[in-house]
Image 1 (spheres, rainbow, N blue to C red):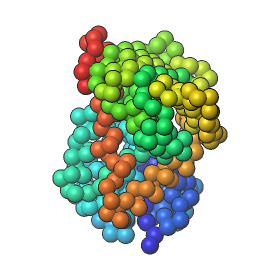
Image 2: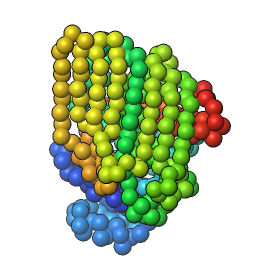
Image 3: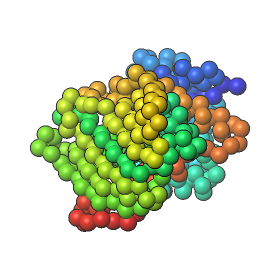
Image 4: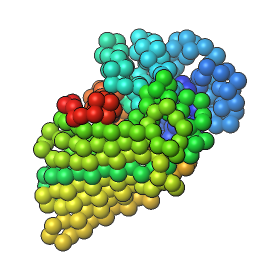
Length: 339
């Protein structure tokens, strides 16, 4: 049975989602919708010639041929779509972030619970092979307990990126580097290391950019496990360098550099998993593979159709939203906060 997918929102990431859908057996791009119908038609002509174009969102909601909806609008334009789709029982996968802050993200999750309709999220870095391998090694105790954590996200975005309508604004995006760029790496950090219980945060808008939100952030992290960590997230590092997570554990040191993984065991053994994939760290925010998005799609649909619990669910994104809000709140207060 073919999974017929509709896409809402046809911005720069939509083409990548079409590629992800087309790469999977048993999936097809069935329908397209944006607020600008001429744009919808143009997108279909260039990237999805067989797709049905919808003038009205209500028509998409009422089309019983649609099996799954991908919601790719800006964060401030999500809730009404999610609410309407959940009411008619259409499964939805939402682009990251869920919404502009933790509270609004909770509202998204709540719609799925009220209407018993599954909602997923594209936190696709969880599907990186290196992360899946490392998560298994940590769960099995192979690298030992995590003692200290270092997270660096030295990315770059030019002013032309922030000059686009709504980019880096609180009203549309909900913030800057933390919620738009760093969210994936922070989500991976939480997946591997567990929850953060206290944070001392700092956010800053540098002289290198003109935007409302932050382009630089730092934080000291106190994990529930007892581990301690540091964070630096930035879009001020020209020309852009790979993000890095270093885990110093009781049996090994783990280095995640971009999509690559190295493990240095205390007994002298070294393991290396190199992917060659880019993660969007440089001036081109779309310089990354669609394969991880395809992995999220495939996993969500398999879990939904077999009535399993959705693993990369909207609810599973709440911890990273809570952490981002806490870093910002700590910076505003100028002191450590408890999460």
